[in-house]
Image (cartoon, rainbow, N blue to C red; front, side):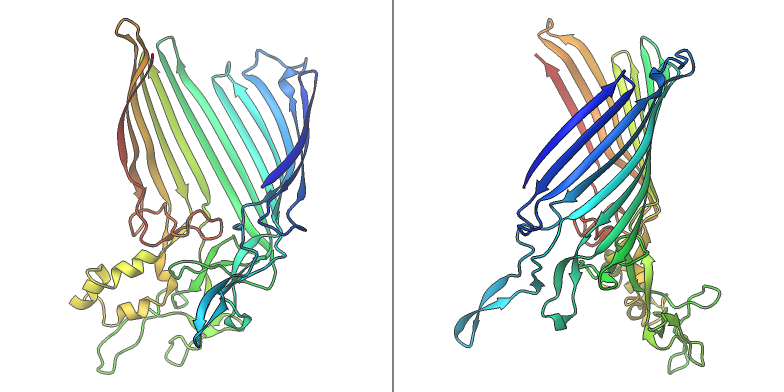
Length: 442
């Protein structure tokens, strides 16, 4: 990877600020004709509170307006040799030969390009005892890179492609308040809120199934958020009630949920004369891994040499594809397996519900106590040979308030991926930790 940039910052009368910049970035992950690209940037701000007409004695101490536009490329979206097809050596009829791997090459890949516009304001109040930072942004992403699942007739199972365009609209809000500030006692409160609305604007070649793990069904689809779960779902009646199977051959009730079926061309459900689903298995968007908002609330309290801090975090309005719900429930000592064996659930319940991917969609919303810290700083010890001696007790991830079926909704079996998110499959929950810390200067 390599990059060159030139930047110039200008200011006038300590009120107007302008930054102009240009970058040329590249990475040999991409073909020589695609790797080097130019990315411009411009940003400016206006310090309104430095104008002569500003009343410095008002409750609003300072105010800054800012705006910026910039472009950037995702140079790490693919691995070093991902644009090439690869082969494996194999023996065939007694001779050594090369066999093409299932991932096909695509040497014409382009880096993703993000174009972002942002506006915001920075405000401080009440002798700087309170501050507020607000930002609105819009991102347009071109040449979105995805590992696309292919039809077997194309000679491979996946190929990395530039597949379309996407947009992000979001807001970020940060506030800090100091309700108490004396010589011995200081109390700070801080809040941060962020919300992002994601939408795929266009795709090349229709819907794009993303290579995933554990049967999770993420997809890139025009008009939907990136990586929504698109799969089979429950058959329901006009009142939203599950349509269960009818009676068995011996006349005993069965009552097993079913997949929705119907006409694939119109994607509409169909019913037979008995009101049961008929036709082909249908699919729809069954979940969205993108949260509605993220909220953090923190507090810091200092009294003489004691200090206390606490941080809460809430992530609300996102779905998890909980593959563990299937693998753990219907086998061994799973709860559903036990209920079917004891007759609490009808025979065939597990076999009926397992093909319904909506069964594995869980609400991932949570509120967590991220960290609590209590500390004391000794002025000096051992005739001042040790200074700033600090003793701290710190707990992290202590409590989680959620309704998640499995262990921890903050999970992803797909690793660090923007496309495959919120998939739970055999993941170790985030551990609760408690630590005792001692530090000093000498």
